[in-house]
Length: 358
Image 1: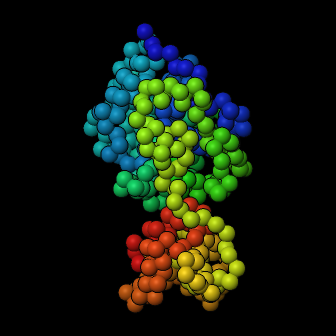
Image 2 (image 1 turned 90 degrees about the vertical axis):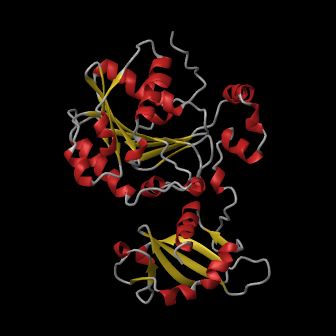
Image 3 (image 1 turned 180 degrees about the vertical axis):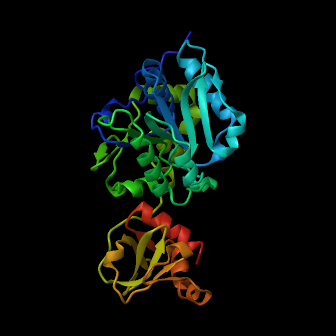
């Protein structure tokens, strides 16, 4: 008999009410995001209309027999009485494009964003009902990294599959669900989500996107505490597990540009310009630098932005030389001593990557 999926778990009705094509849903672990999406957004609509779903992952190595078995047994067969069996070509796992069938009928396609764009366009699937990426927020503290050019790839995927919808008047919706390891994410930057304004329990919208920071219900928190009392032992982890706080962002110094700081240098990384300001009247225990993301249009023609990749080179930019690296020694020391303030968590993580290249 199927297990009852309690009504105090994650639900997408509220964010769907804004009817935006791109939707981000972030909440603490154990909120039932993945299960709710598989059952309510993919499996039930497929049974009713036969429309398939496109499920995105970052890398092809994420696609495995164990992964598919977990979805089949721990979600679909646990919360329904249908006893489904996935059918797929095992040889396609390494290629990054896997079609899953049930009773010979196409159910979902898994697509790795790391595959070549040409392959994404060639392996086209008509009339996709929904596009979804689960676990879209990774944990860089565990050595995980986002793929390069992710925003461009997602644009291509959405545009390609949107063109193939049979009902042109019906919008193709794209969803991202994940745990709050950090507010820094290339998808947030792509959508220009103002992360400094985000607060748990609220929904934010832009022209084409909606972002929900879902708060666990009191009933679910009580259930989690009873089921796993160790969750309360570590205070920081408890904030992450129950309150949905970004565990990796807790000690980042975020603030506004103070007075008496002057522009010292500019970096360019991942398509973003980061201006670094230096404190003109430094005293003991004061912050020495302030970093903020700026528009390339705001950079003076007399300024050179330092970058680390030939792909980043445009007018008024230069690759960092060994001699240039010596110029930033003082900045590196300040980073190690936590004497740098950032305009946002995105700015911090970009500077952190830059720091390891200096």
